[in-house]
Length: 208
Image (cartoon, rainbow, N blue to C red):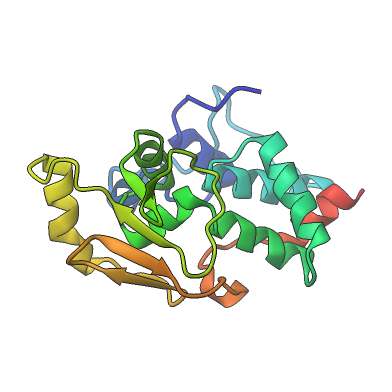
């Protein structure tokens, strides 16, 4: 299965809620969900009751689209969450949050997870002093992530340096806006993840 390259606003309209796939654009009037709240498609959708299986599938798809993960990789994260001690659903969200591309997004180095993935792939991020270009790399407590100063005169680097002070960073992360670096202080708990995901439904989907 190839990565989805179509309009990401269609994914938000399909779910009926904002997945924040375009960063700040999703908070303005330009958001497609604000202008067209109906699901995508040529014809108006019929009103019908969604089954329990359908609701579980919707939650799984929502999590995949939010974090930008493909099905095979998402299932690998789920099997890893099952092996860990604790609640499987919370373990799954913790694994997704500890991905390098998501941590870069949480630090405010990128406006969206898709943009954060691009920064990592293009070699603009260092992990513990070493360039890392694998977005799915799992960070650990104590790791240091830095936005590389390859060219401080670039428009993107200057914009990040100017706006990084206004970013709200989760409590499990620590950000130094002067050096554009951050440290992972702890593993995120469920209360630290500000997403309207029903992780129990995802576990039930894969448990059948």
